[in-house]
Amino acid sequence: GFDCSGFVQYVFTRFHVAVPHATALLIEAGRPVPRAQALPGDIVVFTGTAAGSTTPGHAGIVVSALGETPLRFVHSSSAKREPGVKISQVENSGYEPRFMQVRRVL
Image (cartoon, rainbow, N blue to C red):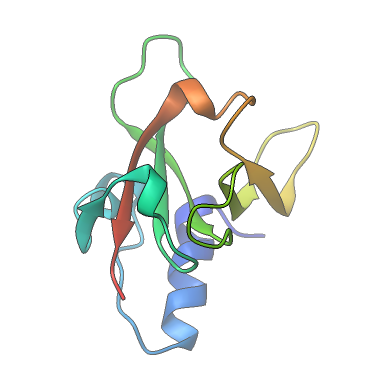
């Protein structure tokens, strides 16, 4: 299976777009955009799951349309209870407090 950054890299590579394989480097890919301006194909980056974490630890690809709420993203989860590639939302989820940035590489 994929880890989150491996999944992001795999998808972008299929479209001939180079992105880093490490989540810590995805936070520097492209340019930052406000969450409310996220577009499909943008990368969304979250902190890790450790309490108080302030460093990138998870990433996915936005699938929501501009202005759509909640912001939805596709990602590869390694969580023991729900592993695999899935679509999740930022708002009203465990991802919301971990949200760091949206990055535009396209």
